[in-house]
Each structure stands twice: as structure tokens, then as C-alpha cells.
Length: 158
Image 1 (cartoon, rainbow, N blue to C red):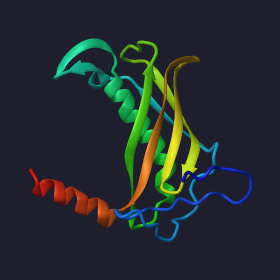
Image 2: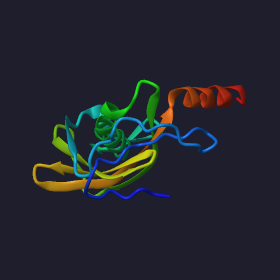
Image 3: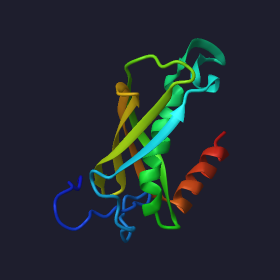
């Protein structure tokens, strides 16, 4: 069941073990509406490529997604306990306008939802005052030990 944000005490993120059992809540999560910004300058390393080949000399969607994750993660990390980790779970992105190398972009992430074991942020990307991209990014909070065990299990199946 999803926990909706409302006026009153700050919501708390919970983390779940693989069986779905909740453990005691972590520190209070960020409040709805809290923001973080990331300012970047588009470099040649950020242009649109497929299979290592440049397809357009503009800010690529892969770089955009990486920067969306970075700005959203900055809102979660201060609220994690030492035994917790945030992992990307779901991303939506609309890349609306081409942006050339050398352009300065501002990514603004805003906490939209805090659930029992998740944080969802809305992200707006602007070049000057023009909206060039927007999207949302959902992160899940997991126990580090469980996440590391899942990685090792996957490695064993390779």
C-alpha cells in the first residue's frame, strides 16, 4: 500500500527485505517539495551516441538520464542510514529540445512522493529559460547486505 504525503509529521522511508517484511524506519525522508539543482555544461563526451558512434552533436539522452539520476540521488543520500542504499527503479524522460555542446543546463529535482521504501522526484531541465527536458525518477531504499547478496547471486549465474 502506498503511503501518501500529507500535512503533519514528515513521512518516513522504510526498507524491505526480499521477503517484503518491513524493518524499523530509516531517518525521516526529504519532505515533499524539497529541491536540488545540478548545473552542467554540455561537453563532447555527453553527445548522442549509439554503439560508440556519434549520431547527433547535441546533449544525448543517455547523459540526460545520468544527470537526472545524479540530481535525484542527492535528495535521498542524506536520509540513508549506514546499512541502506538507494537504487534506481523507474525513470521516465521526455527530451524536448536539442542542446549543443557548450550550453549550460540546470536540472532541478523536486521530491514528488515519499513512500514506505521509495522516493520519486520530478525533474525539469532548462537551458536559459527554455524547458529542454522533463521527467521523473523513482529510487528504492534497500538494505546494503541484501543488495550485495543479490549482486553475488547474479554473478554466480553468469
